[in-house]
Length: 204
Image 1 (cartoon, one colour):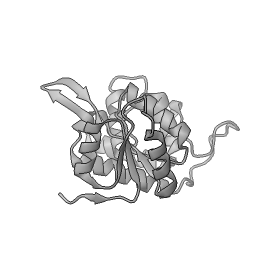
Image 2 (cartoon, rainbow, N blue to C red):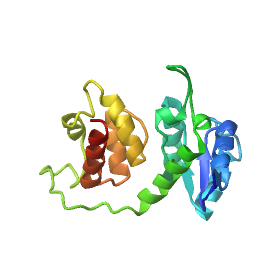
Image 3 (cartoon, rainbow, N blue to C red):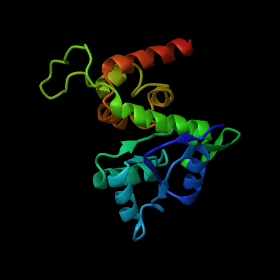
Image 4 (tube, helix red, strand yellow):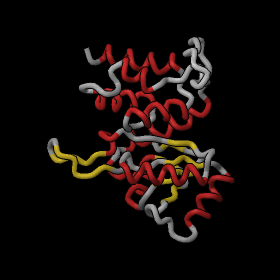
């Protein structure tokens, strides 16, 4: 498999994650070494952020999301790549032994990073009408929308969000965070609904 060449530096959590990403890409990879971020790490990330840009790729779990939030506060214009939990899981039969970037195959890592790069350039406007609420931005997908489509609060909603999150390149998360990611990535209703319809068609 040919490595993906990136201009941006990829920021991950640990050395094993770093090794996994380097198997997939030709790029600078910087590890935070967990939540603590030892002296010098933030400076290294900041230098890359200002020089060539960064893509944040953390584990799709609670700790990874906390580290992502901390990095986002420090580097608000960073790009974000997400792995779906199934793509980052080490399995033994049906039992999940571990969840992390280190468990992902190169193809999944490449797809997540490409989605992060493409999302920045994606248009955020569409022809869908406003929801009519002064507090809801036009074209925003809400939690109520997710619930109405079977993506929140119902049987199988978690699995549907995982599949849809992978399709859209925003990873796995709960319904509230899913709606926030759709907004943060500027994914218009038209693109969201088209992906949802494809998934339903493929799973009939």
